[in-house]
Length: 333
Image (tube, rainbow, N blue to C red; front, top):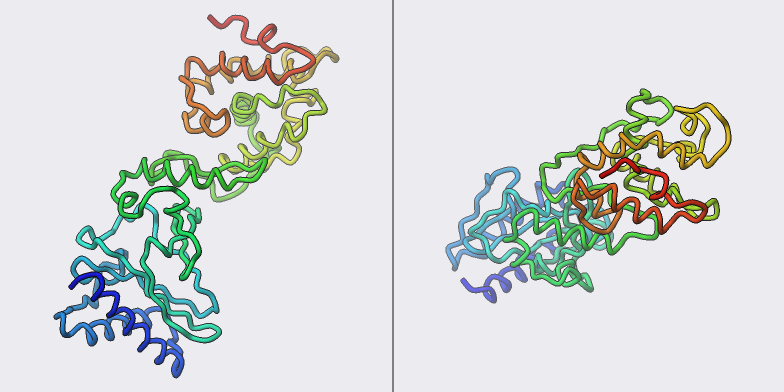
């Protein structure tokens, strides 16, 4: 069977299932999926099609017929849009080279349509793992936006797939937004706590560690009082990477309680004094934090032993009332 024959078979299948859905709406997705199997086997008799009714529960696509596959989608709503499989396609049937979507829409005017999988995928939705989102009759596919064909994308190793996904996701960010997932691996080394914690309730040691990490990643904090949203990246980092809510992020650097840790004398530039108190912690953070964070927040990869020097360069460009490199990390080689 060639592609033209299989697509003609899909035309017949969708026509019959649309008629059935119009007269008797399928009650659930499993009923619809099994009916797709029934009709496919009936219509494919001339091609000796044999359909597996008991595939692996996570198999992708749902139905495999030689080199052809069908991913079945179903909704009781009046929409042609649905979340699809993981971008990693861990359980993909490698024998299948041509994948199609058969979509049963029971809301509004019930109908069933098919489309090539690569043409239907339009977006990546991120939950615990990035998943494709598809829409029948979409104007533009995700793979066209990423400038790579689905066939080429599907055979890439995970790290390279995530490179494309991150580029796509980053291009959609609005001003002040950050990606909450950074790793280019399906088994993330970092995991976000399921519960959100308040910064004010954390132990003092953890507060200090988080302030050091945030100070390093977000040199914008050294800017003058008129710098807009200079603490936004700090708040986003703590929330999206550590699950910590800091309702007053500026107090992490400008409050007397953090500026006068080693010297109770009032006065001076509190941000400078706060950072001076964190020098050792920032050095430790620079050596341990993963590179993906610096690519995300600084826009480039920087070797661990060069991160403090790079931070000083960035901070000097941002600060207006003082020069960080003249007063901070002076004992660095």
